[in-house]
Image (cartoon, rainbow over all chains, first blue to last red; front, side):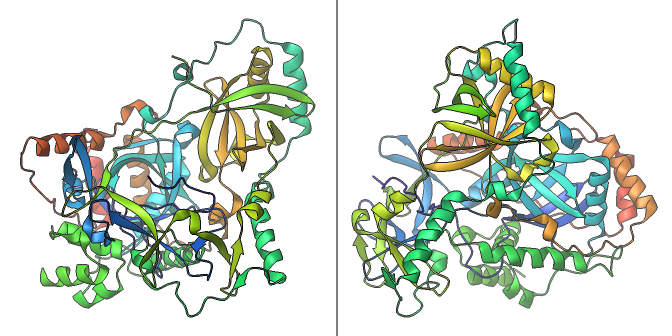
Length: 343
Length: 258
């Protein structure tokens, strides 16, 4: 039985995770706008909140969350783990990333915008998570053109696509010259008031009460959203405790050596991602700066030695295009090698 | 069948009180797998490990610590952590009223329906007040030892609370200094707009289905019966070489079958 999650514990996800450093594109692929293809990298536009707390020994050694085989009581490497469904007691059907990708090969690499809906018609109930799209290769003119057109028409391009083995409904929006993506919940993931059993409105509204509430709303009217009201108070209190103890030298441990980044890519814990956000800004800026060739032919595919500089998700993407077997278990370097051998 | 409420609170708007129940508005439809050891298909379990010694540390023996800016660790004891919990309260305090456009979609985290707690008179008066003012409220409450800020608004005539992300969870796009766009060709802009118009529709969430869930279930069923699964990668698409020509061809092609 896993220990119930405690506050500050980081989520453990079974997903492959690129190492620290370069911002990780969550997905790489193409936006299809009619017959215009726009290669993009997709980055998460939100960060995990809260103050990251580590699990440590009394001596301050940071503990790692690892997977164990329940039969052999042995620690497992991430590549020794696969996903399975129990179809009858003790019998599991396993599925690999390759099999899941192959279920919808086009959808896992393309966001095909077939409908454009008024952005204002999308009920907030459906919005799930915000992403940025960064042009990933070649001229950015088509990207810019779509961003501007969406912004000026107030429309969102809608599509479904597959990311990491799961299908997402997505709205592509233009704002400030940048394309944003917003994953949406599917209709059957959102309950309707009737599903909850909410009562029907009465014939007669309590006018006096309604008027009093409206007056109270008027008195509280503000023009803009004050980000200060959205400050994370729980984190502030926790940070104050940490700062207080630090300044008094209470329970303060100086870890010997830098234990922290070693083995990070095989660790199951989320890392603090605030550093990556800055890098994401740089990536977005850089992606939009190469415009001199706009309208000209797209540059040829990057040379083999460029592979070293590619993100793991992009390498995985390429390996998938080449249908390289075992790609989901490969490290970044192994992926690059396998792609080179395919040329 | 009425759903079960997850929490009860009291909306406090100025001097007014509206007792409400909270209901989750989203339901999980995801496909779930267990994680297995590849070679023997035994389910895996998680444990904390001391990376130096490789020794398993029972959860109860692990301490929690926060890292300071200098890279030092500050140990935090359970009683100290408990003391930083927010004060428990039933109040859902409306802090201010805003136009709905003031809160954009990047903030939205998770919606909760509100239902009346007890007699529904004040509850429907709240729905009426929100509808007639055209405003949304920004409210703060403490639920299960966590502080939330949410938008109090209507959905299909019913009041709801849309929990919002905290300020440090949303990347401020406003801060981004995007390089100015290249001069876009007027004719290309015009064709792009025509293409959007040609594909314009109203948004109806029921038009879209997660067919991948079905495909995954089919895959599992096929494999259960001993069937083989083919891998058939599709060729990747190439970026258009001539943007104007690609737009023109798209317009000529007309609406593809959705």
